[in-house]
Length: 109
Image (tube, rainbow, N blue to C red; front, side, top):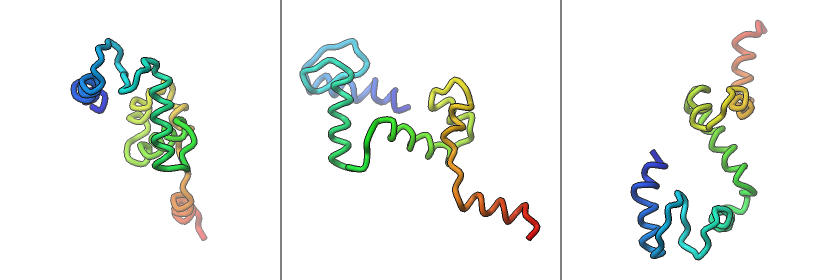
């Protein structure tokens, strides 16, 4: 849904503001046409808002981890674009509270 909104609305607004014409999916408001420059500028702005963010991989990891709390494993595998479910399982976080609940549930003492 986010990609559809970007394609139908946001991308057109960016092209109108920058007075550009492009067939590329991702466009910038600046002079550069390279995707890497777009992502570098985006990271600079994100780091200003939250200095604890170190990389795009950190953002991806936190998004997938949050998805796993909300959705089931197969849905997250599809949303993350993972070919194998084991790739998605690597993002599962064992919360200390969940582990202690399971110990209480299954341990006789």
